[in-house]
Amino acid sequence: MFIALSINAQTSDKLVVIPSLNDTLQKEKVNFYCSTFQMAWNNFKLFIGEDIKISDAADFSDKMNNGHDAKRYTPSKYALSYSGYCLEKDIKKFNSKLKRKYGEKFEPLGLVNKPNEILFATYLFQELKFRHKYQKISTYEDFTDYKGNISRVKAWGISPENTLKNNGEKLSKTIKLYQTDDGRQFAISLKTKSSKYEIILAEINPRIIMAENIALIDSIILSAKPIKHKNIILKVPALDMSAERDFNEIIGKDVENKGWDGWKISEAFQKNNFELNQEGAIIKSHAHIRMTKGISFCNTGNAYTIKFDKPFMIILREKGAKYPYVAIWMGNNYGMKKYPNDSTL
Image 1 (cartoon, rainbow, N blue to C red):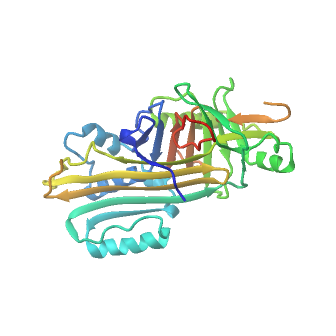
Image 2 (image 1 turned 90 degrees about the horizontal axis):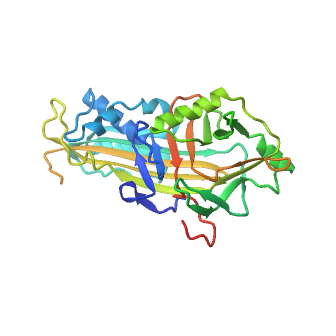
């Protein structure tokens, strides 16, 4: 169950929700990408039959039009999309699919018949469990953000007191570590119960564009042999975050494609929830783009230590895939679970 405070990314000094992997990284913030908005935009393009043209929003439109094939890199088993006119009979059918797939996790679409509206909606919910459950770390972890501020946060992983025990050795086998020759950048792949999907965490010197950071992590993994150690101490901040964004860059703007005179973007948003703890990761996301016609809108001892105690990347993707369906740059402590008596969160 998600209980994290929801923050609109446009009003937060800690968080930005980015709709595209082509977005510029704001290094001091948490940068949250999930593929659902790019999928909705791509469905918009398919419906129109060409690149989308939005008045006074050329930069945003160009960025989204040049985005990758998000559907290809998003697990179809866990995703569902709607594209078409808001006709009651079609919405009713989609709501039935939504409930069958996700139960009560998402609210159904409104059943009002609106033939002057077209909706592009994408939903994603996945629980990606680790192969073996890790441990809660009993003490706090100091996390230093991009600006140098230190916070005491709750953590999970493999605790020092358990790493030399049988369970610690079993958990150590679920970790693949890759690092650069100088040891300053590294990535770990954590085994999940799924043979198809993986969770990657990485400490890197961030590049300007989010996609460039994905490529950097891949280069670290491809150029280094995995380091295996039977005794590992692992410490990762526990995360429970909720973030949403209204894409005001295009809301109320005209669709300028030929044949779509009088149509405007009346709604464009994405809502995300993400949790990462000793059991695994949970992603819940949905994105809507609505088009309306005729309305105006205004190494310690014998153990190898891996600590994520400064800005790092989180990636969820299909194994071997070029692009992830979730990519998060943790530039600060947003979403980290506060350790008792710490006032910085």
